[in-house]
Image (cartoon, rainbow, N blue to C red):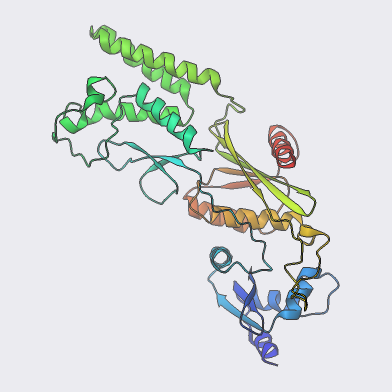
Length: 381
């Protein structure tokens, strides 16, 4: 009777609904454009309900809800609540691993690079993600070898702070801490590093060649020789890079593969037209159904289909919402193998979170479909 009263009074507004059992345990968290229509649809006789949903409804004794201004706010709230409470009837993809990024402290007068695990909304410029801290450290070491960027993290204002360190003596730093370099000259180096990390190596080489010519004209042959060595190092790096696109997009490619009651989700990270790594998440293989109450023997009902009660689109949609709700880099384009529900709402949410346009596409042919095929094949392997 209490549940009936709730259903009769639930508002016709967008928001998040929270289903609970008779002990107050949260069973499921969802969002809706119309809370009244969505929640009441669960309690109507319908053969279209999946076994998972039917089991959930049979256990439901209470429904809480939170009204929001719009569907994007509802999606954000739903993602946060699911991550916090982990209801057993939601698709939960547990993966707490945070890949490392390179952060350029662009708000400093003399910026420096550091390794971080989370992308924050600050004035820093982030590059990555990198698939391992080891490969990232190698990249950072290479940058400090090629470019004369400071390695200290002291706040500098252009005034001398101390004597230059050994890196200056080795020609690997311009000693801004000692006041040996002008801000505009240091900014040229920072610009070159951004070109390098974004894969814009043709622009970087043009910048370095121009710098070498200027040094030669001014008879600064030692500086010209150092720039020549930088050019050689960048060209060697370019030979090793596998460029799959000349349009320099930032993309994430996502596909899923099912096998023996498990689902494997594969991400390919493409930055500036190059594959820089991947992320692999395997869902647990259910021996018993997480949706049925334990029997007297302590075991739940055997779930023969494993994740079969979840369709691929639902799993992909849940993954996109959970993964990008964290402190991760959001690319300009997310490539999926199939359409997902409320794609436009998710695009609006991600665009707002990124602070720029984000597109979600499902390619039918061409190079992007080949990327989906590659992700699917890696998921299967």
